Length: 398
Image: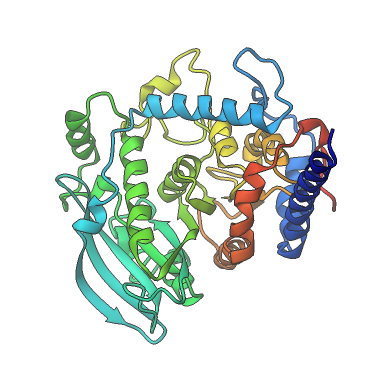
């Protein structure tokens, strides 16, 4: 080997070493003060439901390298998208059809009611909130992080996250805008055309247009349309995007985070992570097929698709909680392929199907860390570092 090639090899090895070390150091530098609390349960043995290993090929043989996982990841991704029956979407349509219906300037936040199309003939209303004084429609010098905020099951729909109802702890859109984020709160398609509201009628309208699709496909498509709209604003940083939601909204977060890599950090609250934890068999979600013997898939696969991007599951021992641990444990080895300190956690407040006030603070702190500019810039490096599973620690350092 010539001296030139030796020097090139040494330089390449040094760069790779620096990338690995920088990703490890960064995880410590921006570490949440309560990260141990939400990760310790994932590192302990569990006698709960045993799930098939995520780091395994379709034939069951183990996966040991990141490159192997990336191929397997694409297989899992394609299976789920085929199962959902995802239709094509026009990424420019939300931008081309955007209308600002009203604007209200509060003391510290501007709140706009907007309307746009997610598909031809499907109009969606949403609230767009951002720090007052920020011109997100034209400014490019100071681009802000942005978050898609999904409402829960309520006829108040988008008024809830926008802070226009009495449910103050679910006003994620308003509270995050006060912390410097741009937030977009889109209305779920189940409330289209009402009141009165008829979920089944809206599902039939969608499936008549796209035979064979699942209702969850429409929710995912609408979530992606919200991201399309956000990244079109000059004042939004397209590399610092998140998603949050409770209950119904928590379900939408899981799918958007799994299938849209533009989402760098997400929080799903009490959505019911397992197919058996909630009404995932409803026609507006996945339908009865998931209850058939031999279905063979569950949502630990979707959490694995999110890796290495940040994902926090919040439970209250109702739809999620201690019983959710095996699903995050199944995805933990995948996260470890990318770094020593996975951005994955389960926080159980044990207060039922609610959003306690402390949850609002923790959600904001999660985004403050994992949507920080340094963390988001580092994700690209983490995705490109080849790493063997045998080199990963089985336990995080506490």
